[in-house]
Image (cartoon, rainbow, N blue to C red; front, side, top):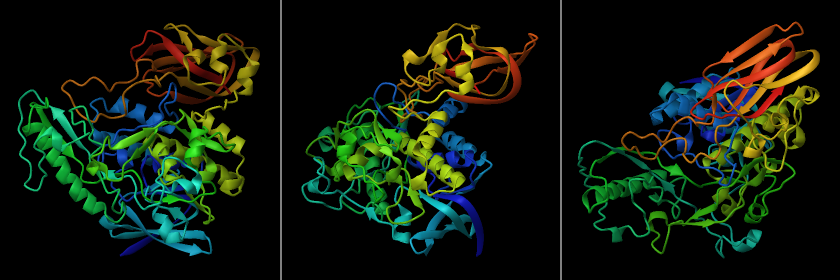
Length: 562
């Protein structure tokens, strides 16, 4: 066996969306980053291995932007057939394209070396290469979901449901317990142009009538999230036991839909079934601050807010599939949006341990809103940015300049409710043909420039100025009603397309004192947030939108010059 050793600024454990967004943000902000992932692909519950579509904040104009929107738009552009393995490839491509990021796939973290209350290094085993990886880092970010570093480092953590009285919450039970939300194996079906058959394995469960599936809406439009077990078991150590039970249920449910009455699936076939359960809850770290149900309901207006949520407090019954007294979850209302503080991502007792994703420092009740993947992604981007700022400013991550961090996040198109982004001094100084593009608000129809093809937005000065950067935010339709990937595949599916409102072609013009014009022509834009590094002297700078992915309107939130 061989051992490879590394020294880095930030080591991230877990390559789900929180870990990936953390790694991309940190590396893009200039620090050396290593991402250790125990699977062959990135994306966690969104990957082709589990295939849960990405949910996030509800409410008008609350869709998450930043890196998660970049990933989703890239997927819509390069993966028009909505194939899950190509979604994996989109995520992999983003990771390996970052020069400051080292990716260690198929590597399971199994040990940690400590010096007092600080982590010195972690060790991971890469079975397919028969290699140990020993990573020394300044910070360790646990984005594994299961908080693998908690038991290896002695970090304080929580598991199960608190009692109502512990945090004065109303959602938890009267008495604390070790029950959690369970895990699910999803399955996907595809429509064909002919009648198909299904023969279940002998070990599949039998559900003869709809009465055998009470309160479980089994239709061809479902993603079968309610096939859920493990909440009354151990969601860590019973994962294989859960998978065995879930597969028996999955095959039984599809057998019921195909062979036990008319469910409208005669021409549909079972295309894929998950062999690895997607988890909702396990260990949660104890951080510098524990976010509670009361914080959620108060909108989470923390001074150090760096991310937000907006999914309801979606509290699944621990019995999951075997809960028979009603619908398997309760959607307790939550504000849309509500804020999450940096402090809930910093360990209470381990000096250089941070975390993002569903394992942040929240109570069970608050977790039921913060656990969905788009929220985990923005938490990851916030944490990666904070780690980079701490390294650059040579301070502990808890002591970073919060206003500076918030400004960095908003600059990177991360929405922070109740905060406004500072527009560049050069943009403010210039004359502008359309004031709305420099108001610092990058969502909401009231903040949109809406023009026609070929019309320009112009900045002008009395004399030439040095132009080094252009910042653009286009309209990717944050109100779109489809997810990143489908949960089923009808024939001739046309749901998953590039947003019609997004600008595809545009020209940037730079005019000097002599009237000479330099141009940047873009013909295949597929992103909402775009930056151009430039080096021009110009008296006038113009943005000229030429086409979109379907809309006749040319829609722009932000056009700034730096």
